Length: 179
Image (cartoon, rainbow, N blue to C red; front, top):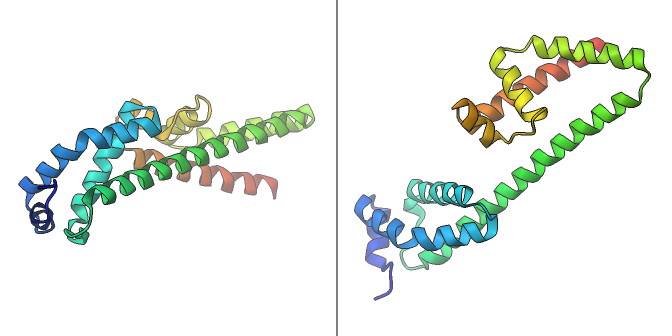
């Protein structure tokens, strides 16, 4: 009998936590190995594995017991990892754009540069303490959302949302200053 058999998968689709626990126990180790091979980071591999199994549990009614669960699991893991890579590339691109803007500012004459720096500092100082701290950790120290979340003991979504709001406020302020 191959594991998992259709009966176990059917029980999972019906919300049987014990059957899901069997699936998790059986596939956790190969899933971690697969993720670690692609990510080269055991902690991130653990996070991705947990996230994918949580999503599978949330979407358990969509499982087709007659199809290969293993194929479904590993495609889900691969897709989650690729999404993680895309997010990392986007973060790197945003950081590069920020550095490029700062370089352009360095090329401008010193009076204009000094005024912009002062304005930017005032705008940053007007942010709430938490937003200012998150922004500085991300931009000045180059910390990832996850690193900031761990450091501040908050969720990565909170970090992301606070950065989006802080950057929007700074963009709005810079438009006002230019006009």
